[in-house]
Amino acid sequence: MSYCIDAPTLEMPGYPTVLFIDRSSDKPLKDHLAVFAKYFKKEMRFDSLQFDESMYDNEDFVGFLFLQRAMDLVVHVDHYPNRVVGGGVFARRGVIDELDWVWLHPFSRNRRLLRKSWPTFTKRFGQFSVAEPISAHMSVFLKKHHAK
Image (cartoon, rainbow, N blue to C red; front, side, top):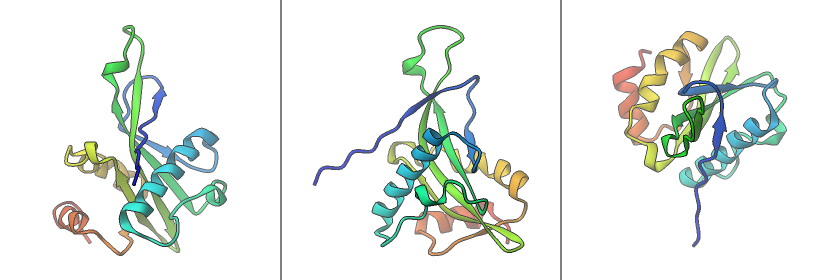
């Protein structure tokens, strides 16, 4: 079986670690998020996608991309390449938002990306819930970092 995980790059000022995607975001950013949803589906062996093109204009979803500095691609001092290494989606479920899914490239796991982004998520979404099923790794993470 052949399997390739793409980690596209984005050019933007500075080095943000999280980039939020909503209905007003550019289509290429939504496309990147949809690709990570496919990786999530494949790894978790789900029957359906958690995010696809049919959801691009839906107000009930706010996606995000995880970014890391792509220092190997810097060509001059004011050049800011960012590698997209994961993504996820928050879904509005009534009065509370829910972290519907999150997926990180295997090479970017265990590098504290989710932990460092957690305060950004709580600032934007308040006290949110996390959708089930929850993987073993996510369960351990949530016990440490997510107050119910």
